[in-house]
Image: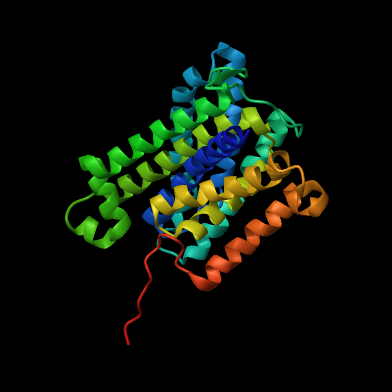
Length: 303
């Protein structure tokens, strides 16, 4: 039972990791928070539902199509919400992405309705026995697909010429431009990559948790928490922060299943509401004792 709960937590954390990775990629490239990023997850879920209605294919086969559509949407977002305001204070980009997110939410509500809808599974919705442990097909598929996407993102950033240009742009845009890198092209590509990862997360989450037009606000908060816990700008930290969120959301409410005596000790402590409260207490503690996050580097000021 413990391993089954951990498998479900890992699956949720893997989905959140894709969301947080895309969030950090755009943050590093632009220096501004994309508050519409959670709405990319919502849009990815609806794109998957629409494609499933047309093609009736499993989610694993729809995933490349969702990634391409969301990458194109991310490219459009960069030219609508970032490039016209890139030379203005960061708050201008914050406001533009918030406005764009509201447009996405209301457009989705008008097109799809307000009722939550269920996305297609990656492979199937059954389960199988693995050494006496019952594991859902969807949970296992999410972990495997997310691991592949994270590995591909790592290889792209660290072992390709485009990846070196992307990292150079994220580290110092002025210097990158001075040595001939087309910075605007790299930033647009980063928006496309981040939105593609968010769209993949949307496909995965829409099957287990359904999807609704207003879900974007919740998901951008999850991304924000993940990068704050892990460390702003750290890709590794974003993944670890996402996994920590999943542990609070899945493992803590499931503890009475593992230890029935806990139900009589403090039943209120093992609810989803209490888990959310404890997650935010953990977040505040990290911000107080280690404000740079678990994997972030401490910033030194010159005097």
